[in-house]
Length: 113
Image (cartoon, rainbow, N blue to C red; front, side, top):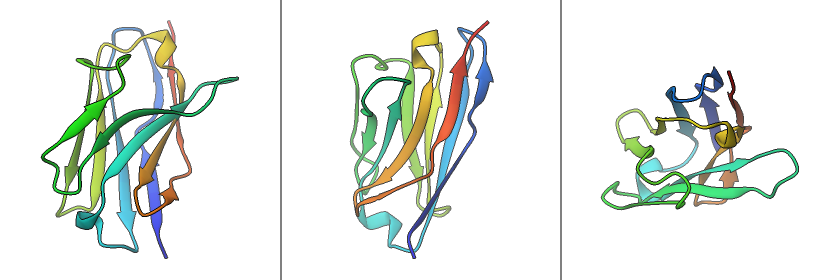
């Protein structure tokens, strides 16, 4: 069955960095685009970043452009989200999404001093 397992979340100070990972299994990883979404308390889930199946094209929400980088490793069936210059407003649960229609369980990111 399809599984998406996120890791790498945690508590970080403003200006700090984190790298999220999403390990995928149960489908042909290289055939599907992958995305990261996030949901802050009391807000709707929003798209953060997307990467095409081959990894050649990416797109980002305006709020994270220049600070976050999405990437994928075909050999490891893993998609990453490198988050730099983190701000308190980046605090949310971050979800991995495979464009085959599956979500990960989410990982909490808290940016606070």
